[in-house]
Every structure is written in structure tokens, then in C-alpha cells.
Length: 383
Image (cartoon, rainbow, N blue to C red; front, top):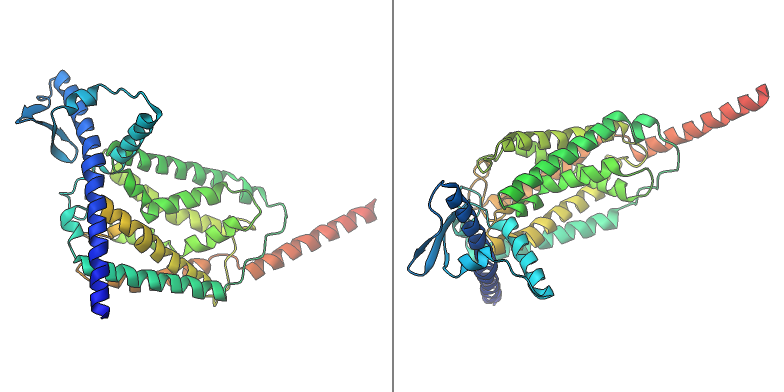
């Protein structure tokens, strides 16, 4: 009975995903990719680099970054005559442009980049079962973490030293992180693969920009800061097992290494000089690790997995393992559920050893207040 229910659920999910993916590619991505390829071919034809799009048996053959595409001949006129008359057409054109720059440039011939072969690396039924199991484990981890959680105390409104709030080093890290992220976004935009900005390391980059720019006060930066410490094993793994076989533009590989170096340097600064917002929990408090692990699972298996199946983009190796994955094989996602919990726990606790614990920060703040009171008393006596 259970096997029959799982099989029916699997068939329903696969049929729905297949229908959405076919509609997505046939009506949106392919048309956007064709239009872009036709325009690019016409421009190259004017420059004399190679012949423009060719009409072959009613199909317009053009070339883009993903290879040769065959499009309806009528698309040439449509591609070079952008006439948007109504609001709906303008919104439709905006959606086409967004999807075009998000996924249409992905080269599926590169190993580990995505595509049908990557999607079918494991069977659909196994994929659904693994997704279901991972979501259940992740939600259970979040629930257990919330039950054991003790909210951090709001930082007192004590003026921070200049080097902690707006010092030169902090501003330098903020500017450097913004520049690197802008370069990464520019590379993805130029190659029409912006969907890969959803990968965790790029999201960590955004989080650290927020943390560096956030003024003192409030509990939001404290939550972001503590949780993101548990994900810093990601940049470490990216340095130990780099995936650079899909990076071709000038400076793209260098930007890859610079981004991951900054992702590891910035937390070290925040741990030592971040200020009142950036404290760490007690070493024996596992609630933050459980919540961080659960959020990781929900993001990957509840968000990135459906998006990968629909777009065929191998977001953070959800469709098939990366070529540098030490657990390469059909069980790579099951191994991931295990080693990610261990790495998440180790990352947050080991980085936390370098930081200031909440009770230590309270003691320092009390000492600061007492010193201020003593200074005021001395000034009154002198006067």
C-alpha cells in the first residue's frame, strides 16, 4: 500500500514538473534565447565575423553561448522589431528578458552544469523520496531548535569605539565585498546565467554586506550573524574542491577566489571587532545549529531543488554531483544530508570560539558603565 502511494505521488510530481519544464523552455526560454541569438548573429554578420542566421527549411539557425539553436523564421522580424504597445506586452517582455538573462545562457554540455543528463543522474522516484525525507528532517531540526532556543538579549545602546562601528577596515571590507558581488552579478548577467546567484556562497555575500552596513542595535543582525557562522564551511569547501570549469570570462576565476577569501575574512573581523550586535551563543547551546541545519535543508530541497528541476540548472549540485565532489556517485545527496549536519555544527562552534559570548559582552558592558560612572564621580570631585 505504501509503495503504491509513493509511486502514485512520484508519477504525479514527475508529470507536473515535466509539464512545467516543457512550458517554461518551449514558450519562454527558447524564444528568448532565439531572439537574443538572432540579434547577436545579425550584429556579427554586419561586422563580418561570420554569416548571420540562416533560413533552413523554415527554421532560422543562429548561434549563442549555449550552441546552435533552430528557431521559427518569423522570429527574425520579431527579434529586430521590438514593438510593445500594451502594459501586458511590456510586462511579458520584461518577464522574457528576466528569464533570458537567468537561464538561457547555461551550457549543458559542461559537466555538472545541468541539463537533461544531469536531471536523470538518479531516477525520479528516488529524487522525490530523498526530497521528502530531507524536508521532514529539516523541519524537524528547525522545530527542535526553536523548542530549545533562547532569544539573544538586545544589545544595550552603548556607543561603540570608532573602529567597531565605522572604522576604515570595516568600510574597506564592505566596499570590497560590494565590488566583488557586483562583478559576480555582472559575469552571470553577461553569460545569461543569473539563476546561479541563488547559490549559497553568493547569498552569504549578501548577508555579510548587510552585516557590515547594519548600524548598532536590534536583534536582526544578531540572528543573521549567528546563523551565517554555521554556513561558513561552504566557502571552505569551495576552496578545497573548487568548481571553475564553467568560468571562462576574463577575471572570472580570480573573482571566484577573491569572493570566497572575503567570505572567510569578514567573519573573522566581525568576530573580533564587530560590536555589541555580534555575539555568539554558549558553546553547549545546540539550538542555533539545529535551526541553521534545518534552514539549509529547506532552502536546498524545498526551494533550489524544484527550481533546478524546472530550469535544468544544477543549482549547488542538486541535480547531479559536481565533478570535484568527494562523494561523487548516486548517493551524493544522502551523504550531503549527513556531512552537512556535521560541517554545519563544526563551522558554527569553531568560528564561535573566536568570538565574544553574550555573557562576556554583558560583563564588558557592565565594566564600561562602571568606568563611566567612576569617571563622572572623579570629575564632580575635581570641580
